[in-house]
Each structure stands twice: as structure tokens, then as C-alpha cells.
Length: 162
Image: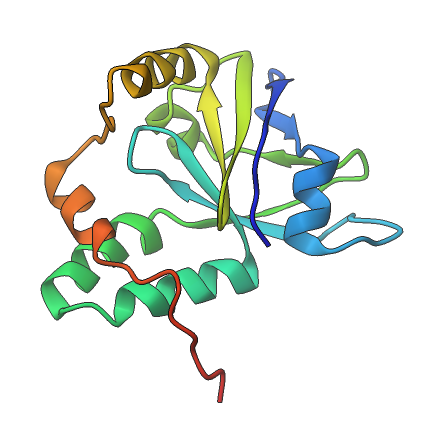
């Protein structure tokens, strides 16, 4: 599934944010209730958050684990070490852990963004800055070494689950 589009949402004082229905269904499938279902949230490359289903994060991890050891370990220390499983409540919200909330500078206004194989959560202010950079042909990345290692991931490779 490819994710696309953007949705404006509000982070409440308890750091809860609703997962847009289109993304919730894309990540977890269509179902009667999402109560207790978990998404994996981790740091993103541009001071935002990446959001995956559990299977999606496992697939992502396999892809970067196939890289040369130095790149794989760098990415695992960044993505894997910062990953949190966040359960959905009855209203389809997740709680953003404090460390992730701080790293993405999330405040009240947040933007959910579809990015092909995953979903992102941005602070509204950082999203506006990132969009300005895109208009100038610039990919904003917090760390050039992470950017280089991430660029090596083959998102088109097929992996045998056995």
C-alpha cells in the first residue's frame, strides 16, 4: 500500500492524536474496532516521526538490515532504538511518547503525511518549513550520515518471510 495525502490534526494535552481513518485503515486494515491495535512510531529523518504497522516496521527493519553493517547499525540505533509501540484507544488515537514528542517538536497542531511506504507526523511549523525547502529542491535531513545510509535501502526488493 502506498500512503499519500496530508491531514491536519490536534495533539491534546495528554499527547494523544487521532490517526486519520484513511491511514488507520491502510496501516491496520478495515475492521470494526481498532481498540488496542498497535502502531510503531519512531524518529524520522527530518525531525518528524515515522509511523508503521508492526509488520510494516518489521519489513522496514529487514530492508535496512540488508545494508552493509555500518549503515545497518547506524539506522537501527536511530530507528529501532527510538521505536515505540503505541496502542489505539476507542477514539482511534495514539499517545505520542514524551521523548518522541520532544524530538519532533510536536505541539498542538500536527500534520499527518502519507509517504509511500509509511506515514509521518510533523509539527505544523516544521511541515511548513519542509514544504518551503521542497519548493527550493532541498531535502531537509537532520543528519547527513543517516540520509546517506537511508538512501541505500531498496524499497522494491521482495523478501521471503520464511
